[in-house]
Image (cartoon, rainbow, N blue to C red; front, top):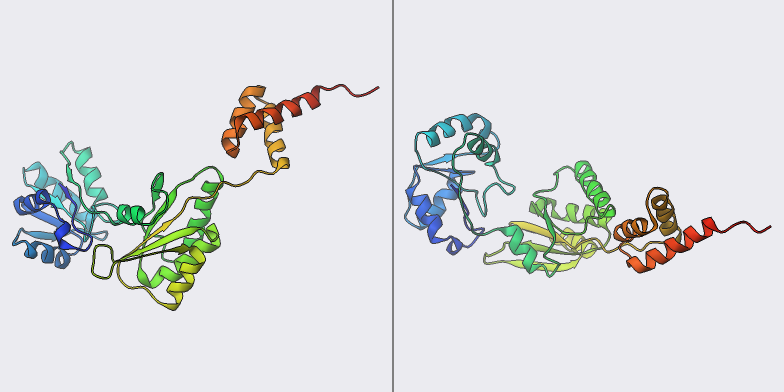
Length: 281
């Protein structure tokens, strides 16, 4: 059973989650100290065991044996929905492969809450977990994502980030994506909740001068539609006309360029007519 827990305010846990945790033979958690505080607040004292990136592979066979023996296991993250930027994926995949039932209880999720509070387009969206901690790898990951945007990806982008890396990550985002609208959601559902909305460059400058604290979620707006020059459009159309009919070439290029089909069709017709026009004597 995958059980979602609060991302800050302990009152955000559901009744079903409390019932499942109370009935579990074993509660698997990232940090037993964090989960024990939640359980103690509701008078629950199930047996706890740590499951994290360093022991999940080794622990999975033993946990599968417990499930096969009829034991009830509940998996939680330190906060929010399990498996999203948290351990547990290996165990869930192994349980599914073994034909064991896997169910879940929905609840709080910092990425979703930050997205809807950001004021940026909520759909489509892409949740990317944590950026690489090292700058070179982080910049490479952002460059790959920017290349995907140039190929057609258009979605709001959501990351978690550690507070001590926030300013550097915002600066790298601004370098990779330009001064795009973004939001930094901090300490969601807690006493000092803050959502700061601005361009990436302004957010980078703010948090470089005033270092953030607490749990952080970043939301970056989708890529703006890039304008197509007349030369680029003609080049795309000539390439498409070489292997497609006039109608199909116009449809393909209009979709890729984000331009009205009638406009692209008219240009394709003009290019094709120019090619067929006989040379003057």
